[in-house]
Image 1 (cartoon, rainbow, N blue to C red):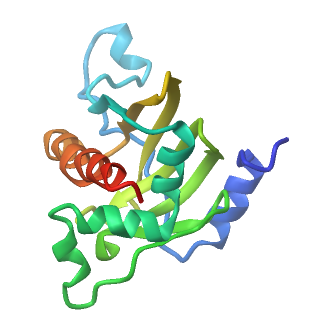
Image 2 (image 1 turned 30 degrees about the vertical axis):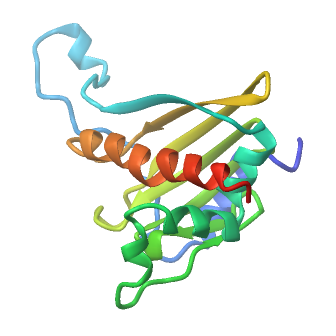
Length: 189
């Protein structure tokens, strides 16, 4: 198995090594009791999901680097209104591991998680959480990168976050990630 993809065994070992209370929440709220056979199968169709597509005037390699390099992402944060989180009392510095299973700390520690899959210039999958969520709640953020000439189309999916947070998160991806990333790339850094 390629070293840039985390195996199920690696996930289990990584999760076992995490501090107590650090788990990935993958369940949806229980479906209301219903009399239909469809409801009896346990499937819920109430979970929110975010899908966004943005195009950047840069290569997939450059976009991937910006999302996975501490120095670059710290610069991106400083171009967003999330920069205030870096100066808050008790704020943690931006830190991004370059290893599958490695942790990341963004926006002064408000956003944390671990890399699940890292395919340079192609795809980044993260167990991602906001500091306002209940302990142990994690979502999955997936960044797909595809070259379109000299540009990159980024297809993004975010799922597994607490129900009701979708609108705020969808807006947040634009103002904290996509818009400042575009500004960062325009600087030519």
